[in-house]
Image 1 (cartoon, rainbow, N blue to C red):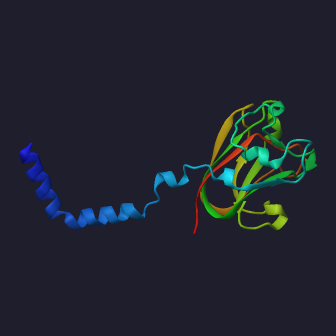
Image 2: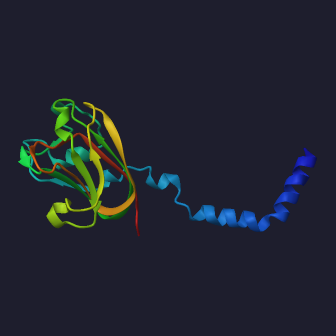
Length: 178
């Protein structure tokens, strides 16, 4: 054991500048826990219209319940280009977004786009696209990687058709930019 300790001490003394460099570099990396918190619960949700009793806030209430009858899903009316928007209050670096789909009518969300940015042009629906939701199984939650996109607004929009937009939970894992 003493021989191993001496070898380690010798290695560290000869490579001290390297280790200082590594330690300094590690302090500048974002800590993984910085984006492990769901920041959506602190935001303010809105949507193009409100299906009776299905308020935008229900999509960020912290419950992944996918059955509409349980009162934890947001929904628009059958609109052309329906949208749902989350205002985080300030710009964040968005890493990933989890969306929980409705159990009943699960194909309604197919083709929806997730958009992230700081603009409210066209209700935020012109912001850069993070992902297109091809499909989410009934009542399941899928994760969409946004790779550190910057934005204050998170939009989910179904473009080009009349549809009910129903979101049973939206979770946003991001770090605030100061």
